[in-house]
Image (cartoon, rainbow, N blue to C red; front, side):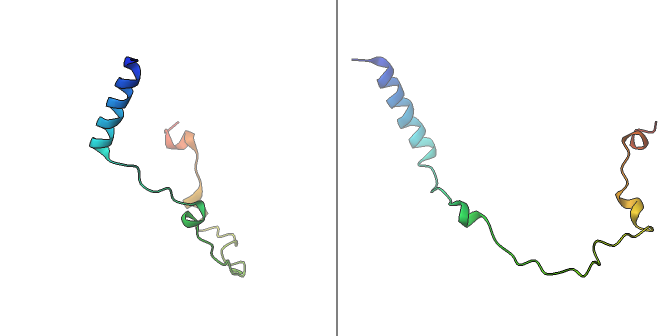
Length: 65
């Protein structure tokens, strides 16, 4: 008799007793959601010089160099 198979079976039984069975697999179609995108009229794409500072990122300035 092969002792490796017995050890694997015992380990599998212990794992099943501790964790039970795996949850059901979720299909990819159930994980995604489609949404219609309407025209924004260019309001979100417009440049705003007063608010542009919020999106400026410079590592040298962040480190105080």
